[in-house]
Image (cartoon, rainbow, N blue to C red; front, side):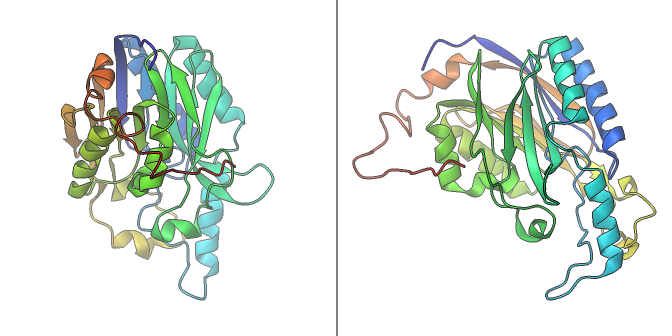
Length: 307
């Protein structure tokens, strides 16, 4: 591992998206990123699908073997508010990253520029305004598969930063052991986890991965309520079944020893701030380095088929 800058000033944004409205989501993201950068943050992280939000609880008319037109209309609205990458929204995000000299990570629903397929995608911008990483979720979870397609290119992109290698896995991708190893093999020091997972069991997962990978685990979740959904959707009966608080958040930061740097934050919007002590990523690997001295490449190997 090369020498790293000692401290990374990070901001983790736990916020509510403006569901089904990419323009309003973008405006809110830019506002919150400016706020975080104004407090000295060098890395600003947003949740999964912040633009245009995570349509939790909706099925868009799909049932096994059939679908209905009302759901198709809601899906088209979500499609229209998804982001073409690159496009005008990414241009604005890149310009902000350049203006403030920050690394910026944000989740979007990506609309393929050639086909009609949507992807659950995480973007990372550099302080030069470059869109340096476009990571499409490898396998949408459960019923997510009727909304977003499987990643079909650019698997496991990473960004080289002053604090080492940074990459992301989106939500339950982190339950794929080989996907984690694919990132570890690239020398990951900052593991970004944009997600919509407020299950208490997830906290055990984030601590385990930080400890396993000897990296900082950045757990970035959303907080949103039933009232945040548009009131004119075509399938309102789906929303009536939702709890008042749909996603509680639980964003946190865990160090390479599996200890909380910032404890989970629940049931509110908040920007979490921390100084990551990057020396810990090397110190913690003294007795465990899963892709280094604790590996057995003569016995076990991972083959990644790059797309």
